[in-house]
Structures are given as structure tokens and as C-alpha cells.
Length: 449
Image 1 (cartoon, rainbow, N blue to C red):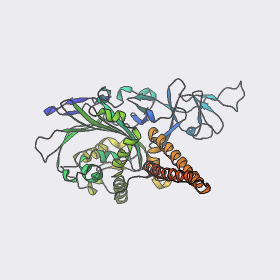
Image 2: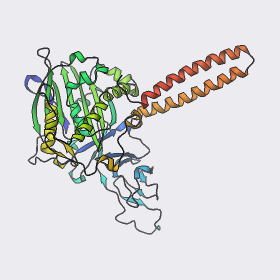
Image 3: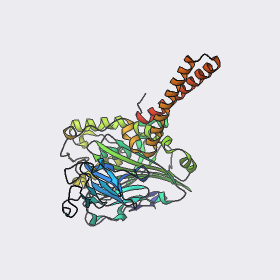
Image 4: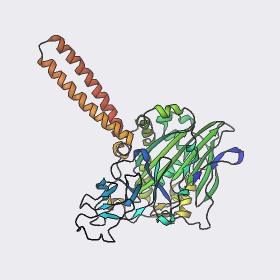
């Protein structure tokens, strides 16, 4: 499924959703899920991830083919992601069983050379493909996988368009993230630290153009000034929200994908794109741009965590908890109503009037998702992880150099050498402090003043 710009009334861009099938039921397994950006996928080791608390592992064969398996060895249930890749096969480090990208067991060291590998010594595999720089997995059976249903964005195939790619794990359910991003009215309040634009908060005109099992087409515009341009805002089930705003030859938008890792955890995979000032996106280090993205998304992190806690504590229908406004919350309510109508197959959800509780509560089987930036972003982002490790090494070297030069200054009788050693030691100390502050950007989340 390619999401392409379309012209609705008043020549406003929307999204063309696929034609609904006669079967209007939604099956969460028969969908493509974004796992990670291709540039953030390690080349020489297994990559683990979760989908609704089910564990999976990605790895690459030496010919470049990706494999996606259940992250569990059939021998004694060890995690395959703790293993290693040998000659294109993933090896369980517990007893050395090796598996191909399609889950077939190819080697068991404990069997005699002439013995057959047991038929049941295999791991369930899942279709996995690469599209537009993102790794996608199909959660259902391979027979039902249709690559045409991958929700790619046509704007990103335009050679004049450049994107800023960013990935982050959040400590709350996917549905609360989806609700947050179909709500443009909160931006100038919750993200005031970034935009400095509280004065621009205002009523919005919001329209729902289409509502179906495939998602919701909508648009909004500001009302304070007459004849404002419409911004298309669409939900493509089950894991994509798109913004698009274009005028004359300028294209700008955002594709916000999400992966429901499990109870109280989701991953967001975001692409902000434009065909203007592309030189900045191409020349600026990716990790430096991520500092801004981190702060922006962390500005309302604690608010959404608190919102989810309140909703779960109350245990009531959102219809009784929320007080929505037509000038701000139309798409929020429509998304929750979409869950009411089509979300029954999901492992758990909370619509506007209905809900389904997870089989296991968070406190029964796992620790809460981390709040620090290091684990939520830096360690899963290839560019930030590299920059973080370099910064740590630089700081250690500078501290060691400062100490060595200080010792030299103390031990030498030569005043000239002593002076230079003290000066360079102080300079190295200042640089070490700067490196420590840079390191903190990779470790600590933004907190409101």
C-alpha cells in the first residue's frame, strides 16, 4: 500500500486509502509492522524486538537476506537473540544449535554426523522485507503476506525530498501515542519549550473525510485567520499517522509509525520530510538533529504516562472520563471509536466506549519501560550510539591526559614545562567537562524547568 497525495475538495491533499474489502473485520496479525530503520540494524549480530510482548529476532544471511524468527530456541527455550551469527546462520549460545533465515535447524553439535535432525527442531519464521529504509515484518502466516499492503509514503520516493529519521521507545501503550499524535491542538501548549508559541493555541476546524477498517482520513486548519490552508491528518491502520502540508512547489510532512512492543511500551519510527532546506538534513549529523527530536518528544512524555496511569486507575469508559471539544478533539475521539468498531482482535485496547484488558497485567510479568534517554533512544539508534561511545572515550582520554599533565607539572623543576603542562591540563579539563555535557545529552531525558 503506497500512501499517495490526493486532491479533495478545495484542492487539499489527503491520503488515498486502499479500497475496503467485503470483509470489514480487522485482524492485527495480517498487517506489516515497522521494526527499525535499516541504518540502525546491526550487520553482524542478532537484533531482538517485541510485538505485543511476543519476542522476535532479526538477523541477516551473508547474501543479504533478512530473517525474522520467534526468539526462542526449540531445544531448551533459550533466547536466540543472545546468540551469534555464523556463516549466515543464527546460533543459540546455550548448545550451539544453528538455524537458517527460514527457521530450519541446520546443525546440532550433540548429534552424530550420520543422525537426522529432528523435524520439530525448527523455529517459526515470519516474512520480513525492506521498504523505504525501514525493516518490516508480517505478523501472520506467510501465505497471507502481501507486500503491496506495506504503508509506504509516496512523497519519500521524490528525489527532491529529504527526511529526518528518528526512532524512540516510549513507556506507554501504543494507543496513547496514537491519540497524542492525532491531536494537533496540544502542540503549542505541551511543546511550548520548543515552539515558544503558546499565543498560537486556538480553536481548530477539523473534518473527518473517511472512516473505514483501513483507517481515518481527516484534515484540520487554524481558525484565527480566515482562509488558512488545510493540513491533512490521517490514520492508516494499525500503526501509521501522516501529516501533510503543501503549497505551490513546497512539500512538507511527517510519517509517524509505531510498533506496539507490549503492555506499557511502544516504539515510534518517525520521518519528518520536506523538499526545502534539504541541504541541512543532508549535511547535519544525524545524532545532532536527534537532540532536538528527543527534547520535542520528551516534553509531553511524563504527561502521557500520567494520563495512562489515571485512565487505568479509574477503570472507566473514556466516554465518562474525557470531555472532548469539537474544536480540538474530533480525531482523538474518532480514533478511539475506530478501536471500538475494529479493535476486537487486538490483544488489548481501550476505545471510546469499549475496552479489552490484557491477559497479564504489567506488574505480573515485566518491569516498567525505562524513562531515561539512553535506553529509550541512544542504544537503539545507530548514529547516536556511535557518537555516545566516542564521547565516552574522548572524555576518558581527556581526563587521563589532564591528570598526567598535572602530575608532570608538579614533578618537574622546569618552570617553562610546568607552565605549559598546567595550561594544557586545564584546557583538557575544560574539554572533558564539555564532553561530559555532550554525553549527558545521550543519557538523560528532558525535564521541564
